[in-house]
Image 1 (cartoon, one colour):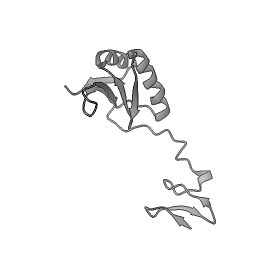
Image 2 (cartoon, rainbow, N blue to C red):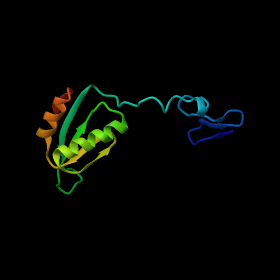
Image 3 (cartoon, rainbow, N blue to C red):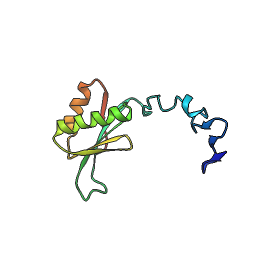
Image 4 (cartoon, rainbow, N blue to C red):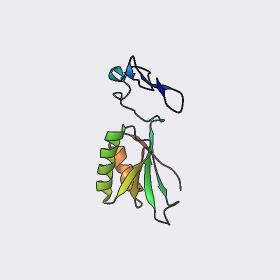
Amino acid sequence: MKTNRSGTLVYSTGLGRICPECRQQASRCQCSQKPQLPRGDGIVRISRETKGRKGKGVTLVSGVPLAAPELKAYAANLKKLCGSGGAIKNGVIEVQGDHRDRLFAELQKQGWTVKLSGG
């Protein structure tokens, strides 16, 4: 019987690998098949930030209700729309440059509730 650092069972000789989330046999686990949507209040927020970027500004889009694979594809479309690069960090889309107005219009066109946040 093996346990991880937090003390939960990860392997049993009788069952084999065990999922730490639902504690079911790994072959019967349904945790990884569920789409993990981020929790939020249903509002997509757009802000601009320069902190920690040597004065270079980025536009942050947070609260988009998509799972990780769909969020990655959607972020690519937003970056193409703005004609700039960017990244996804902790479920927040970062687009290089100040593109708040363009992203605001695009997100509203998608039917989401959008707010500008920050200064």
